[in-house]
Length: 235
Length: 297
Image (cartoon, rainbow over all chains, first blue to last red):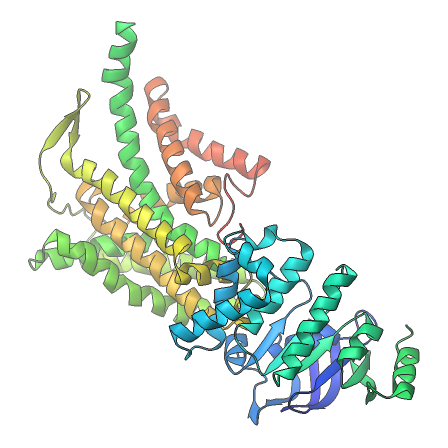
């Protein structure tokens, strides 16, 4: 479903991603772990089209997407929930959500309304606050809004960056329940997360990154692999 | 008491009315400028020339017999593709360069100079005054107000209300505000950001063209007409808050009233420096202006 080959990405003169190869099967949840600044977020941003790679190839569902504009990548079914949530402050909760309709441009108005209803059923707090400015929500609610507005576009590949950062344990549990629901619907997920033990419970497999390269890969259900991962990233 | 009322009626009120008409004119020109700045972060130095282009297109089409009321719709429609092509063909090409602000400022400045010379070549250096579409005047509290200027005030308010409605109450407006705040995130939700940018630039240019049609019967059409308003329009955009529609309205009305009323007490030569002085002070004490930027809450 997603094949990355020899990916190199720069931030200015800084060589952040230094030749990553990754193959992700349909419906799999892959954890992307590593210390701060090793290139985890840059990897997701490169896949989402926020940063143009200097070299390498990203193939999604048989189509090369590297170098394409982020909106085209989104319309191909790649959803992205970035680290800092990026809720639009001038927009209400509902406006934030309905922007997500644009990920599926050919969906009818009735289907869009049905998708919005499903989101409100799953996130009743967002329904209660639909007319409220998005940035007036609590941190947890904003994270749910960030997830919901991508989910409304029913992505086939979901890139999630540090979703639990700064959130209370109950909200984190709810968040991982949502990730589980997305997986059950067949969505492929690339999850960057600092809370590695929690993330491993949701993942099928993982990679560990160090200085822009994959230094370890393993099965999330294999105890030995997980222990070696924890040693490798010094948690 | 009666002296104060007479002073208001015969001195202050007429001056305030003159200020109000000028205010509406400035708001119409500044509206497109602030939308372009708020969304694209581009200081469009050719905006005054797009205002002039609207006036000249109206003049040319008017000379072949098209009625003024049709031109009010036709000219902005003609300006839309012009703006779209300029954004996609010129601005987009340098938009992602490291020195975006300087490059786009110089690019649009150069474009404005080319357009101004083109107007001089085609229409000559002298002013052309289109016929006033509405003749006559009414008495407003003892002040004679030409009916066309009254139409400008009402029409200007309608245009501002319609623009605010589109920007703040439609899905298209939500896309514009989202792209103005965070183009990457907007794009990842499927917003076609480059088309939104080009569309908003075209919309701003069309608004400048509409202002040209509306104001030419009052201020005439001439090659350098853009310069007269653009300095004031920039001042209004800076004082109101770069990219704020409410800011343009409040600052536009406020500054033109300052200009109009101050000229009663000091030499009118000083009214412009006072207004530009307010802009300088604003930049020093509140650089973000009176109101927030488009899409920033």
